Each structure stands twice: as C-alpha cells, then as structure tokens.
Length: 378
Image 1 (cartoon, rainbow, N blue to C red):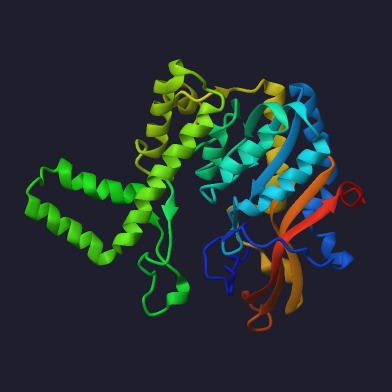
Image 2 (cartoon, rainbow, N blue to C red; image 1 turned 90 degrees about the vertical axis):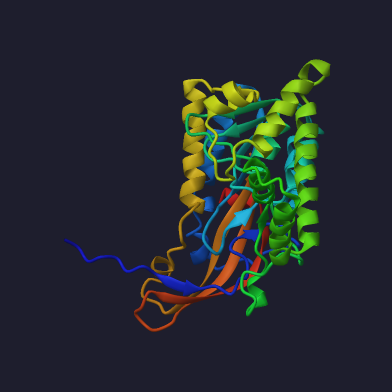
C-alpha cells in the first residue's frame, strides 16, 4: 500500500467563508508566462468554443456561460459586479432571437438574478437557462425568469429562500467580531414561529416567552430585515415568472411555484431534480435531446476540471519543491465565443515549515480579468 496522503492545512486571511464576486472590478496584473500555462481555463478555451458552437448550432441560439466555483476559502458566488461584463458579451453577440445561459452556481446576491435576466432579455426574444448540474438558490431565482429551463439528468435546482446577514445579526464569535455575523435563514425564523403555533402553544404568555427568547438572541431589527427579505424574494420570483407566464390563467400557477420554492421545501440545501421541477413544481423544464445532453455535460466537465468546484486548492502540487510562490487562481468565468472574463485570485503561498503541507496564503489581489478572443486563442 502507498503512503497515506497528508491533508494540507493552510490559513487564509479572509473573513467570509466564500468570496462573493461583488467587489469593485480591477484588472489582475499579467502573470509570468509559466504561471499562465497552468491555467486550464486558458489551455482549454478552444475546446470549449468547439463545444459551445455545436450546442449553438443544434439549438439555433447564442450561448453565454456563467460558472462560479464553490471552493473552500477562495469560493465565489453570483454578484452584481458581473453586470457590466454580461453587457460586453451581449454587445459582442448583438440582438438575436435566442440566448442560452449555460449556468453553474451554488447561489449569491438576492438581487443579482433579476438584473441579469432583464439585461439578457434586452438582447433576445427567447431566453433559456441550460442546467447541466447545480443551479441553486440565486441561480434558481435567475432560472425563473427564463422561458425555458433545459435540465440534463444531473441537473439540480434549489429553494430560493435567502439567508441574510447585516450589522444587527448576532456574531459568530463575540470575542472576535472580525469573524462576522451569523447569517439568518428567512425560513428558520418562520419555522420557529410556526413551531410555537402548531404545537398548540397558543397561550399568550407562552408565545411572549418564546418571542422574547428569540429577540434576546437576535436583534429585532435583524428580524425585521429577515421579513423584508422574505417579501423581497417572493416579489422577485413572482415578477420573473410573470415575464413569460402571462395573463390571469397563470396567476395560480405562479403562486404555487413561488410558495413551493420559498416555503415548502423546508431545507435550503434541498436538491430539486428535473422531474420534480417539471412535474411537481410546474416549471417550464425541458429535457434536452441525447446529443445536446452529452455536449452540455462535456462543457460542464471542462469548466469543472479548470475551476474544480467543491475542492480545496492543492497548494502542495502548485509549489512542487518550492517553499513559496505566487499563483493566479481562477474562481469564476463569464464566457462566450468572442470574449472571456475570469474572476481571479492572485495569491502568495508559503510553507509554514520547509517540506510540510501546511501553508500561509496571502491574497494579494482579487478581481475580474478580461481576456479577449485573440488573447485566449494564443
């Protein structure tokens, strides 16, 4: 038997568990050629263009890909800073009959999906979202605004109830405020109050005691924010659905979809299969033909291999025999045939002790990098 691989340990001076791609865009400095060669997003660009072209020809559409990698410490989520980059891609594509958004994300900012959908619809008559695998939370909200959700057999949607964090939320660690506030799930608060009512605790004194126990731990203004987010996500979901489910005949259908996705799945991590999405929830889901299904999965696999969602960065492999080094790590991508934008982390990695697999990681820069067609084709 071979030696058991040691688990790498590293410290990253970032306060949040995942970094949302909602920061002031900044150009990442050009790295040394030897580092750029290690970026699979660049190396595999032509192969992805080939796959995208085949899907476009089969579906009679133009494709924009948006992929956010949920990686430990250096993860990314949907953010409003992407809007100008989507606009660049759409200006390059120009107005067309059909646009397909090829999407992978575990979620992000509540308001971002609404802005992306309305921008995409400015440039097409029909909008579809292609779902090869996970399109959760804010990604699902975005999908509600599409005329069609094309889901492969591995496709997943999720509940749209958000978690909120603001200055009034309780702290993760009161002794260390830098760790930030505890996100509060909208549905967790609602479920707490429902539990009191459903268990027959209708005695006003008991209800008052239960409410006081909640407000002693959570600031009343934080609870008010939770309620506003509850109303917001229902309103956004309804308006996005109304973009394509028009008329009085669809009002009941819309209400059903919004209620299920915002309240009736009871767990934010619930994974909605394409059968459930179509047959139970009532979304406009279609199953792709076998050829397109295979192409969608190949394209997803290519992005997965480059961005490695859900996996730790293997700093031991990156360093090799060195004790320190600078690396440009890709965390998200917006891509079409002519343009590519990558959200990147410029980091310095240093072994704590020579020859060990424990690291200090200093994030020197984060931001979006624009790579134009002729550059990425080199």
